[in-house]
Amino acid sequence: MDSIKYKGLLKGSLQIIILKLLQKNGRMYGYEITQVVKEITNGEILLTEGALYPALHKLEKEGLLAASVELVDNRARKYYTLSEKGRTEVEIKLKETKSFMGNLDLLLNLNLKLT
Amino acid sequence: MDSIKYKGLLKGSLQIIILKLLQKNGRMYGYEITQVVKEITNGEILLTEGALYPALHKLEKEGLLAASVELVDNRARKYYTLSEKGRTEVEIKLKETKSFMGNLDLLLNLNLKLT
DNA sequence: CTTATATACATAAGTTACTTATATATAAAT
DNA sequence: ATTTATATATAAGTAACTTATGTATATAAG
Image (cartoon, rainbow over all chains, first blue to last red; front, side):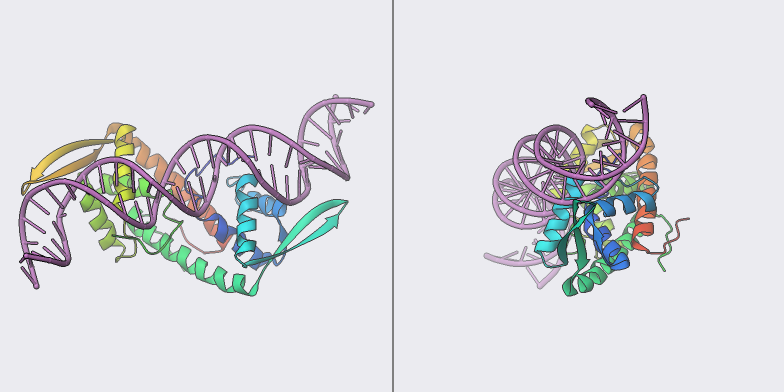
């Protein structure tokens, strides 16, 4: 698995992507996140395991995610959900991301319309 | 000088910010870039010297920028302009950035409209 | 039947782009 | 006289990645 595009750009946005997907879908496991991101972005964003799993562990350690392992088809899946703290944080980080994109819009003359 | 917000998010976007400002303004020096970014973003993006100057040096080394030192008020200024390669690259990186923001829009449900 | 692909997680080593801190130097303002 | 603004540079440390490797099961292909 490898992500060809957006070499530097993904930096800093992986956390909010994970948090937002969990906010939307309630309960997901790591591999599922990689597949959903791939589908939604038409294969343009391909998360690497080496980035995703440490990011999940970090978010769990920080108390934003709760994890529970489950056996499905004799294979271990680690499901994640947002904690209470995570539900608060996702809103904060989302606002930050929007604000940053608004500023990038001004600097790069992208003519975005944030609704 | 320090940038409070967008801790991770700025990563990967500094290069395109520099290139785009030079495309727009033709000829700028480092300190001027920090001030223009500060003004345009209402003080929300504050470039650090430790990030800016190495980034300028790297872009110059890669042949995207041309530099010339000038004395103004007895102080040395290093002016940068886009090279031919830089003029091509800024368009490529701009498209990449737009594409990435479009994908982030899909993942985060931001409802932006890229024109 | 054995090999490749998909599913599923984890981590170690290396790279890169930052932050923070420090350094130098002149000009202008307090 | 001291601080703030202007102007550039670099060294040390950190965080978030990439790349590579490892383990293990299920399924499809040849």
